[in-house]
Amino acid sequence: MNNFSSVNSDVELIKAIGNGDHKAFERLADRYKNALLNFVYRYIGDMSAAQEVTQEVFLRIYKAAYKFKEIENAKVSTWLFKIAYNLSMNELKRRKRYLRLLNDHAGEKEMVDRTQAFESIENRELIEAVMSELSLIPENQRAALLLRVNQELSYREISEVLNISVSSVEMLIFRARRHLKQHINRG
Image 1 (tube, rainbow, N blue to C red):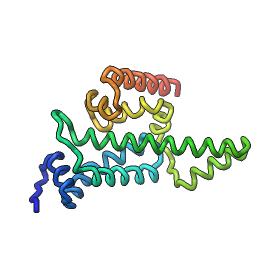
Image 2 (tube, rainbow, N blue to C red; image 1 turned 90 degrees about the horizontal axis):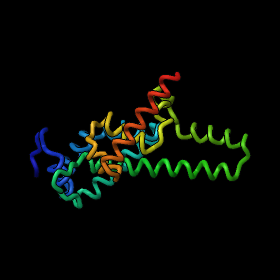
Image 3 (cartoon, one colour; image 1 turned 90 degrees about the vertical axis):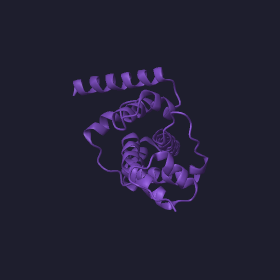
């Protein structure tokens, strides 16, 4: 029986979700669904898969909210994006395994046909020009850059999400920006 105002902190909402409060879950989902979907979509490049991954993020949040411990300087948003990042990585790995399996059992021409069929089955949308440029960046660089630019996370928060040092985050973002500049300047 919580009376939530629009300014409830994320930590209060997580605690309430952990106690089974469905309204708190709806409020948290409303607060983060667009940002998480945007991050996942830009990371994996497939809207249909991004929607599924985002739903899985919220399912995991709902199931694990009671485990969330308020750590000094910890942010709920960092926890949410870490879950989204990990699930996105799993999705990319699953796709690579699937394509490898097809490659092992098909000729080169057949592989191209099956890859195109796989993409159409997944209802893959046309990728924006920026999206295609982002796809050229290694996955870890892309994740760091998207978390910084789109989600405006601090380098420390990104280091927590990606489970790497702050100096590694700085290097990943530097390399990603350099790669994009080089690619854009050639085009």
